[in-house]
Image (cartoon, rainbow, N blue to C red; front, side, top):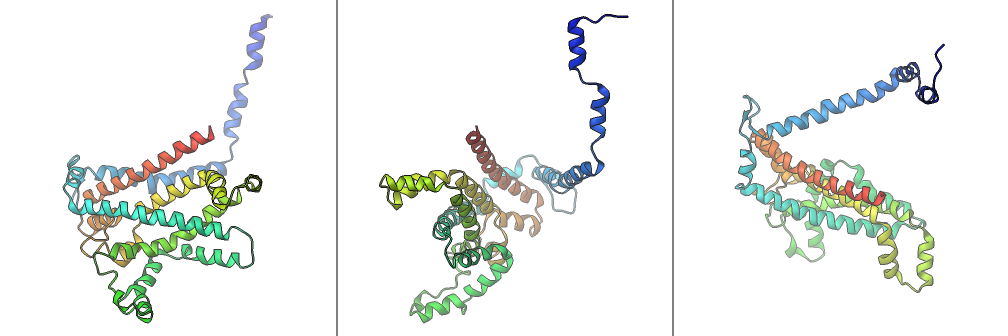
Length: 311
């Protein structure tokens, strides 16, 4: 009979039996594996694989019928000399500043006004959030009727004695982009308001009581208590606004299709028209890659900031 030394007995006792480890692996129910693997397979089939294909097509010249021809970075070099691309990029930046800035400010203002539980507050919250439920296409059709030359907006201006301001809002190059921003903004404010209301509900009321005791006024309490406590919510709102701005398509395409004369063209609408109307799917894929890189940069910056705050 072999006698085990003390180190050998300790190693044998500390190492788990192999049979138990194999049994724990095989003990996973097949239903659990199905719930994990089936969504992962669907995600790979419908999201990851088309995305990889899009990166490849960005390096080709393809009309959707013949075989793609590899051209390297020629599509991206063409963007440097594409006036429509530069115009669409500038409009996208302007859209981001106006749409993003106004939706954040107005959403925060609505949240500050409607955070208190008073009679009738629920009705106003629901009224502001209701446009979020509507389809962007349906919203665009409603606003298209409002912007018509004989629509509600021009008739309202006429009734107020401001007939000189009557305008073909969607047909003028100077006003088309701003007219399109309004329905998108009308829909976004309610969503941002809900995010800020949730953030305001999480602020400890004792902080406001301590600020009042120290003699802080409403503006000082907002600046030194509310804004610092909303730092994480501001990061979420900023990410949502930037991503929504980069992928805004439905309302612009339904109202103006990027016109007149590309005056309301965004990167998203230019990508669609290039790929599916001009049948330049390679160049359209390159535009999609640019949009993806911009959105991915925003997401990465938010994640880095979130991890730093967590540490």
